[in-house]
Amino acid sequence: MIADRKRDAFPTLSAGAYLLSHSLGPSPAAAADSMQRYIGAWGGHTSEDAWMSSWWELSQQVGDRFARLVGAATGSTIPTASATAAMATIASCLDYRHRPKVVTTDLDFPSMGYLWRAQERLGASVHIVPTLDSMTTPIDRVLEAIDETTAIVAVSHVSYRSSFRIDARAIAQRAHEVGALALFDVYQSAGAVEIDMADWNADVLIGGSIKWLCGGPSCGFLAVRPDLIPTLKPTITGWIAHANPFAFDAGPIQYDNTIRRFANGTPSIPSLYSVIPGLELVESVGVGAIARDSQQRTQRIVQHALEHDWPVNSPTDVHQRGATVMLGVPNPQTFTEHLRDRNVFVDWRPNAGIRLSPHFFNTDDEITQALDAIEKGMKAV
Image (cartoon, rainbow, N blue to C red; front, side, top):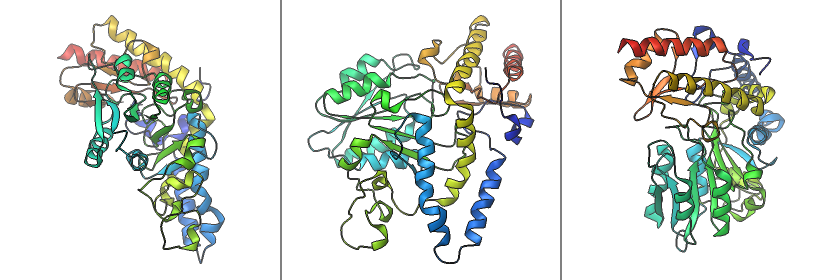
């Protein structure tokens, strides 16, 4: 049980039961103070003092905060403009002439599919492993799809559509057996599910701050296995990725040998400031404690739904599920508005129903409030 839920850190919580962390984590009050520090540094900037005193190192400092939350090595993670930008940078490292296959699933976030299908113009061949039940991805079919022609396996660790959690370790092992890379989108799990990039032996993780990390739509992140970093050469690049960026060399890119080689242009300094308070809060509570609390709360929701014959559109096994529960309801958009009128904040997605995501700041009473409101809504239809 989490002793301090840090509810005072989030002004939004006064509005009601906030169960939307899968979509947009609540804004920490400290984010305003952090942004004010950015304004102060910018306002006092006269030559290179802001860059030299703090801004140049800020990307690495924020990257290391992300790394600690996903089990990545220090110095292996860099903030990016978005998770899609992070994935695109990795995609630009690949040569599809001898290894054209890209293995994905149809439970991945659509942005992933858009990007990988766009690589077909460069010679990629995208293999999409289908779901058989609109909820889970058959791991055996994923493993069977990975062969000697595979360049990369790029899948969501937890699906946005069903909260299904895939077996990352098994996928990474199979990918490495045939010389392929294993990339996992942890956007729907980072900060709420225990992730150990090193233990998975994953090659790449991508994610971002907007959801469980309470950082808003600020930035994504890219983590790369340390020994892999100097071997990859992204064609999506920029001056920050240069080994000596302040030489302003006009020749071909000379990649830095650190994670900075995956940077592009000038980093978004305001975004970095805005994400820090959320990362600090999640780290102070601890992802392990958050994950255990989440499993207890989501299992309570699932059990209540089953007892009342509500359709559950997420795995009922806590070990196959992320931190969100999807419930099938009549007309989910209208149902979401019904809950909002009762100060219960959830959202909905096509073919998923309503989505509920208790996070570390939620209380048992709020879960009761949500379940009671759902029960009233079910009886009203």
